[in-house]
Image 1 (spheres, rainbow, N blue to C red):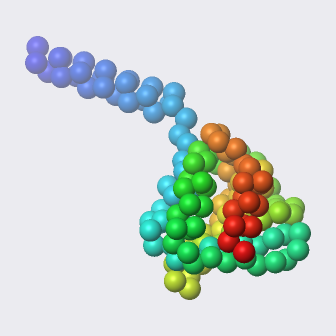
Image 2 (image 1 turned 90 degrees about the vertical axis):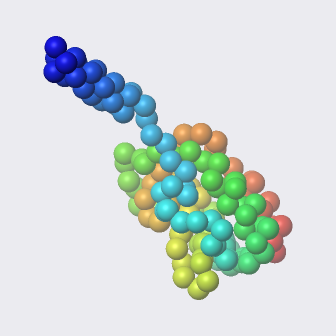
Length: 136
């Protein structure tokens, strides 16, 4: 009797795990994708695709402000991976002198060369442009 009960419990738990894993889409934040600690980032370099201008900040407050914004995106890896065909901005993130992350602000968002659809929040180029102006 105990053996049959154990098998039934194991079966029910297995069914639950299968359906709970399959029915829920998984969305990630940029921090989860690149697996870095944002506290370690020491510099952000913004590249303007229209002018070629390079704008950098090492201001920890500004870095945290921007990281909070980009981490508000909930992302899902795009099924269709496209070559980049122009951009307005991309940002390189550094820990000391080591470039550890590149985000190209296009739709779909490109993180370290991989395209991601933004599922929650939206790509707001005006907000990015305002931020870049604030660090000039």
